[in-house]
Amino acid sequence: MLSFLRLLTGALALGGASALTNPFNRKILLTNDDGWAASHIRASYTALKAAKYNVLMSAPAENKSGTGSSMAPPTVLNITCEFDTCPIGAPPEGFNASDPRLNYVNSFPATSVEFGIQTLSPKFFKSKPDFVFAGPNVGNNLGPTVLISGTVGAATEAALEGVPAIAFSGATGAQISYTTLANTTDPLTVASNLYAALSVKVVDTLLLLPGPILPKGIALNVNYPSTTSAQNCTQVSDFKFVLTRINPPDANSADVPICGSTQLPTESDAIATLGACINTISVFNASTKADVDKETQTFVLLRLFEILSCLPK
Ligand SMILES: *[C@@H]1O[C@H](CO)[C@@H](O)[C@H](O)[C@H]1NC(C)=O
Ligand SMILES: *[C@@H]1O[C@H](CO)[C@@H](O)[C@H](O)[C@H]1NC(C)=O
Ligand SMILES: *[C@@H]1O[C@H](CO)[C@@H](O)[C@H](O)[C@H]1NC(C)=O
Ligand SMILES: *[C@@H]1O[C@H](CO)[C@@H](O)[C@H](O)[C@H]1NC(C)=O
Ligand SMILES: *[C@@H]1O[C@H](CO)[C@@H](O)[C@H](O)[C@H]1NC(C)=O
Ligand SMILES: *[C@@H]1O[C@H](CO)[C@@H](O)[C@H](O)[C@H]1NC(C)=O
Image (cartoon, rainbow, N blue to C red; front, side):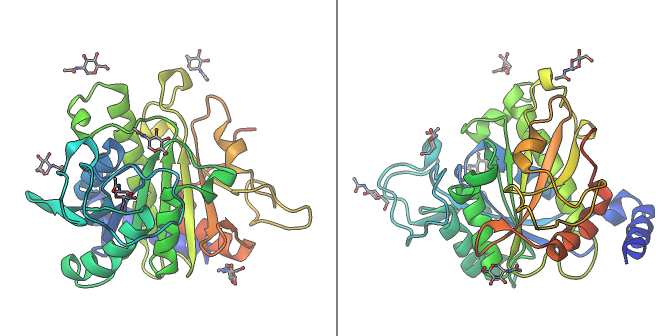
């Protein structure tokens, strides 16, 4: 099975970069919890479009960081949208008149993704999205933090609605406007673009093969380390993706065997490996936000095999 998948991936790769790009015309719904006008999500919107994905954004009108899986009917704006991107009195859901694929929802991340899947996707995609991309969040979501993260809450809602999803989070960043991306030398712009490029790499790999993208009810939690130069993590090729767990393992449970072990490192431990530029990928059950069994981990291992590495010894 594994060699077959690798062979197939290799064969597709031989087709060259253009043949590799979104061969199945995948439709991606993009959301976050830092708000629709935050720099990280807009950099990823641009990168996903450049990678030829069919992209649609549905994200909160305001910063809704830390709101977990909360949901509520969207309401008329009683303050302006973040960074003054819409006026007081604006409708509960709205869009950028120059780019109607950029939508805000004046509610929580999970409600934004629900609106994106149930109302916007039929209009723009004529179907459900193939995949939900949540984030990249400003700040890591590791271990118990997944339970309160709005980014994880959005990915979870998508998975529970039958759409495979990833919550992406990065250590470097700030809740600043997308207009700051115009300054390409600003370290925060560099971080937004780096996380966007790394996320496109994950999406390209996960969505490359035909067949189910993830098992039903399962989502991934992906975290990126700091991009500050002191850590020497400054370009995509500096980073390694490692398969991890959200929580420490039970003494008698076995994870998928990889890197000479049947216990995956925790995402908190792996990302803290100094100077190694480790990105973590944990597989979780959307019903519980807890780690999954080794069969489910194996599915993800096979799907992402090409980009996975071991921690340095
Ligand atoms: C966004 O919300 C979080 C959680 O309430 C808060 O910690 C953070 O400071 C807010 N960000 C801004 C820019 O207000
Ligand atoms: C503004 O709207 C929010 C979201 O519906 C609500 O929680 C808040 O109480 C409202 N504020 C005022 C001053 O009405
Ligand atoms: C709306 O889209 C236009 C064109 O891409 C862009 O110049 C403008 O900054 C966007 N505004 C918001 C709030 O997204
Ligand atoms: C861009 O960001 C750099 C680094 O923060 C700063 O030194 C520079 O002044 C900024 N340029 C502009 C035009 O704002
Ligand atoms: C980053 O690279 C420099 C130069 O190679 C090295 O001296 C430094 O120890 C590295 N930093 C880390 C955190 O590995
Ligand atoms: C997720 O957790 C729920 C509740 O414990 C369980 O019923 C379900 O089988 C789990 N799903 C997977 C795919 O592990």
